Image (tube, rainbow, N blue to C red):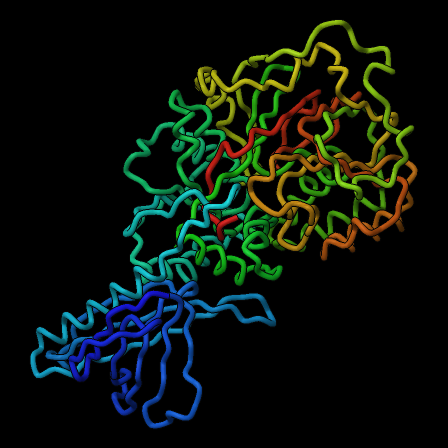
Length: 549
């Protein structure tokens, strides 16, 4: 490393060092009894008690630092100048971050103005060095939010256990304050409220849009942005998820991509708020979903038909129990296991992994072998961009009809689903059609987690994997085998379970054609009409604040 100048704040001597950028001696507030030697490097702040030079110094990693600020003393010390440092290092055993704060008084100079400049230099240097560096690798973070940032925050007070506002004031607000981040808070009042605001607001005022809720509110924001006339630039506005719902799948996935251990709230909320304060913006894949009735939906998480969607929606009555509602819903659905009839087809990924499926090739047949393919070539198809969801983010669905009728049909008109043909046409010859037509579950997933404690797709390693992970369970599986799969899914070991009825395949696009109209289908956990649909991934279309992957 090249040598940098060092200012000793006690002696005023300027020297050189291969690593240390700043060093000095300060008393720690509020006691002012202990004197510490501080040394700032490009990666850490070293703190050494002056009376114990033989002890190893404490090292605060700047990657864990939330912010630093300089300030003047209170009425009891009007001439004093201080700087504080706040960090959230990870507790290795539990995978959660905890707050560590230090405050130091500068008093080396007889000139108060010199002390002020010293405090400001330390605070500014720590903040600058703590700002993340964009990794630069393919698929990694694109940029860092500006400092100071201005956020528009959507909070759903009815999400999860109904404690979103309490979680925000207790955990999020103090961290934003210490990171010097400004915001406007909007508390949603009705279904699709966030969707309307994302569609109508002037986005130039805000550096990012933040969702404090579950995945359902993020679904509204994403689709509101995609319905705007300026959708192509609007969808590039950085988004952030702060988990305060029941499932919190996207937040759990972001936490996983950053290398953290699997945790639930409030630890998960603290981890995600930390990412927001650091401000790394990563590309995020979105999946364009089109239905046989002409609707178009944009999804960041999943499409589910069968067991998973049944549990998700039928457990709504237990929402006040939080994530436990899914365990109760699973038990109820296992007791009365259903079979769903329909057709499933997909476009395989170019290079499927060796662990794609336990099935043999003759159980997956080319589309042409079904006698369904005409000579029509594959073509780009532009669907009517009309979105619809029955948001289960709130208790009532009143007002949805008015919102649907008032939606602009001009959203995202230039975004073509080049891998799809119209649903009234057979799938192309490059696709595969699943031989079975009786299923227990079909799930298209593009994040690592399906819930805060459901590590459903361990093969997904970033927000921008360019793939859809397609899972299905065919009829004939025993309840015992199904239980084993979902229990193992908590730790992501279900992929090691050898079950002939459980199949996984990475794909670029898929089509689901239910034979019945009363089944439950969901997109990102939100109910949609049960009808034929298909989807394809659009790599890196969105932007999400994350840990850099």
